[in-house]
Image (cartoon, rainbow, N blue to C red; front, top):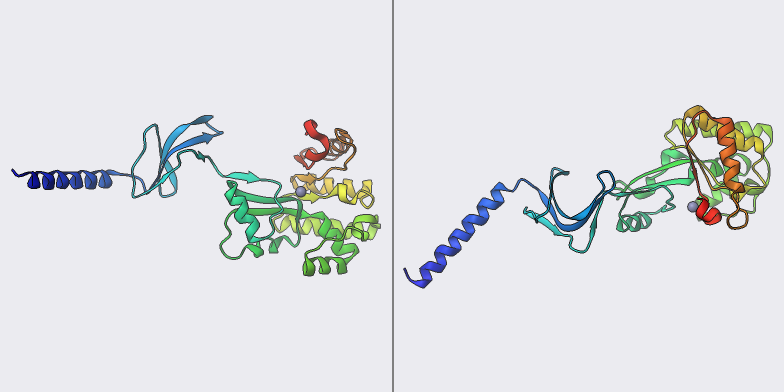
Length: 265
Ligand SMILES: [Zn+2]
């Protein structure tokens, strides 16, 4: 056998072997050599993943093979993050969230209104899962200063000097705010977003307690930007915990208090 023929035979065998491996590969996609971090199983190690039809079928110490393969050397492979505190209201914002590993972006602090229209800005192919709480502030604006809401929708600029953020509501307005919050919870809001700190003069104890009692009635969380004090002062946090204890038998609570409460948060 000439050396020319020997090379051909070896090449043919190599081709055969690779066809055999490809045919036997049970994965559509493999992600090789990434640092795989899975909070549920506590796995944190360099591994390779074999994926078929969108499901992880294999976690291996050794690199795997498939027609599509991603080399994740030096990268972290983990479940998508859920951002509870996102204000990415445009497609670009969601693209940046995705680059940070966020696959579910939720607007829970400021919330949305009307909830049925939330996400329309993302078009027909949103990049991430998305959702919003019922935005108390925008409902309040609709009730006490509807022109400001139109202006906000038109310009995208928020003016906090108007009655929405500075003036207490009368009983009739309170009833309207309550009805709209309930309507929007039924429409799919993921709880109630409350910018308490930004409207600290406007929201009376009656309005605050009404919001918490509606949340308790519907079994949903209130997402509060608590009133601020000096750094480290827990008074704003204590306030909402006390209301939650008094008003609701079941009231999960998420506080936007990282800036103010520091390590207490
Ligand atoms: Zn925020």
